[in-house]
Image 1 (cartoon, one colour):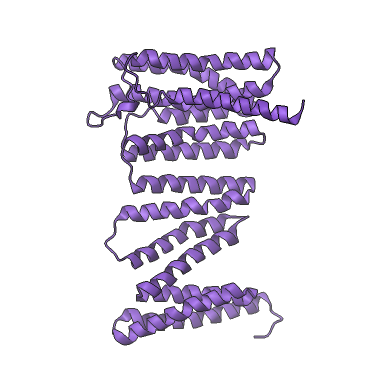
Image 2: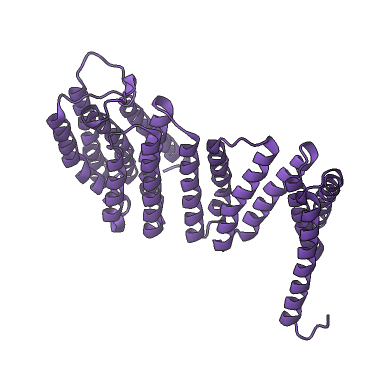
Length: 402
């Protein structure tokens, strides 16, 4: 079969999958008034139940495995939609009375027994179908994938729409998906898609919370922090340095969101410096554990703090900013000198010099311990540190004379 014809079939297959998922997705934001909520959900359940039959027809009768696997992947993509709708039924009967559900996402069960029966009936239909889909996509790990998926989708049923509840739902889902990915170690494309489907419930919770309910900076900070940990763990476990390095992005965003949530009554400069120091903690922790991206993560943490300290020294000088600029500048300059890295050497000098001048100027103008005492303590500490490093260097190279 010609390559272009195969590409055409693949494109048509993807279009069909997109149409099915889009049709099912309309149930999440429906605005239909002609039919009751329960009959509508039964239509969704019936449409989902038809997918395995069609997959069997494609795989066995037509002997076309790609279309069969595409239909089973589609089935897994519909699972979060079912969980979201069933969560609406549960919330309508068991949710807090002071929380109102968004109108376009409202699914009302006739009574509590009806909500439980809907949940039980859907589980009887969907759980075997999900197991069969995972069995085809990743035969050896179908049980682990099914159990993790049920745990993740089960959290969508919690009848609470507060930002705190959403946070406590998203983080365990991401943790379970990461654990499952580390255990399964997917090699094939189908197995990778099966593992990736485990984070779909978390994506649905985030989208639901952002579109219809309240979110907080703490919510974003926690979710992004969990994403950073997951990316770093997967990257280190698989040896993919791209994932390990990309974890720096959600890490920086997470710290920024958490700092914003604190609502501190400090100046902009102090807020920038605090953000830099706090962001360095997880970055250096990742670097300490990393086998593939240690230099990159340390360099990113240093660059962020050096940039922020330099900007604060220029536009809002303070003893703290000057002290940080001196320390980072000397560190960069030392690294550049030893490695013969001119950019790092000159950048360190350019950062340390204004910091030193600003610190001296502050010590002249104001008799506060923060100015002259910082210079004295830092100078004495620097001399002592240099002596200790020289001592260590002689121990490592005994033949070299000091």
